[in-house]
Image (cartoon, rainbow, N blue to C red; front, side):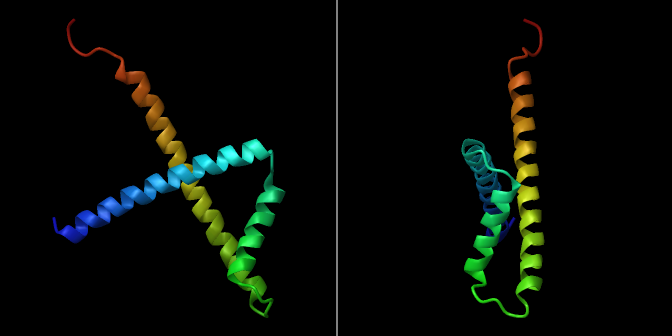
Length: 102
């Protein structure tokens, strides 16, 4: 394996860990604040307006594209978090099972 390939694998691992941590923190924050989809939609709209401050003819088209990509990223992070949690539960359940004759 080349050093670039190994660095790519390590980078992918760090990105996955970051995505899991972000999803956990986001879930904890939204549960604590007791906010719903309406608040999250406003948050997304405000984030887009920071990136695209002027309302031009392409504004709605770009916002729709941004919203679609954002939803896919969030769905991916949430599914990664679910896989991590399921793996953690399975590991906890089977870690204590003794192997072989006692």
